[in-house]
Length: 301
Image 1: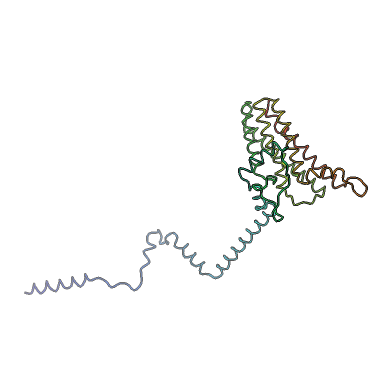
Image 2 (image 1 turned 45 degrees about the vertical axis):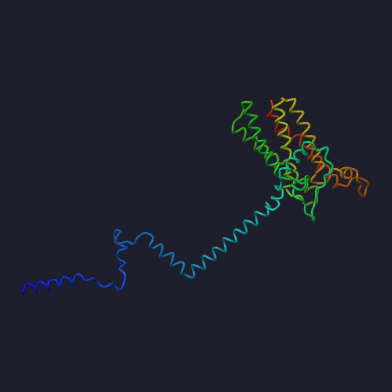
């Protein structure tokens, strides 16, 4: 009996020790530092604390807002300075073309003698885009023609066993430098002639870039028919381009050439400004065959 009661007392003590402990009042966070040597906190713990501290700091918020305003102001200044030199809206106008316009304009550049109406069309004092007006200048054809000229030059040099990346790069850079020099010379001539117009550098670049079409035709004809075919194509494309520039002159239409040459001033002679405009237009037209020949004669042998 004594043994039985003792066994019961011992069993009750065992059950008392096996009872679950009550939950702690506070969480034990010491385990977060146990995995790092030396008791240091886990990576990212201080960073998260610093970020939360900065976000909750009023001075930090003011500094971030001030920095954002400075960045936005700087972005606006960059866009403003960029638009001073390159107007995106004006640039889009010169690339507003379609397939029909490109085909007709290429035909006009090669056969301009049958074209009758050379007037640039306007709608509410705003020139129509190229896809709506065949006489409007564009930059799509000069850009594509320049790329095609470079590729054609590489093919011609390859046929003649003279191709190398250096020679092709020199050919492309020379063509680009020449057109830049031509545009700068035209800008200087416009300034000296005191021509008042709304024409921009893009207009002059478009008119100067149309020569690449004639250069392509001349080189292709030379590759197919030899030097004789090259010179025939050179003469045709040069005369066509000269006639085209005189008709769609950036300064005045060809119908006013007679007025510019013979129009009387107060002393009975041509006005000085009109003479300067006349010389500038004729010089720009006469320069086209020279530069076409200079950039293409070495590709045909």
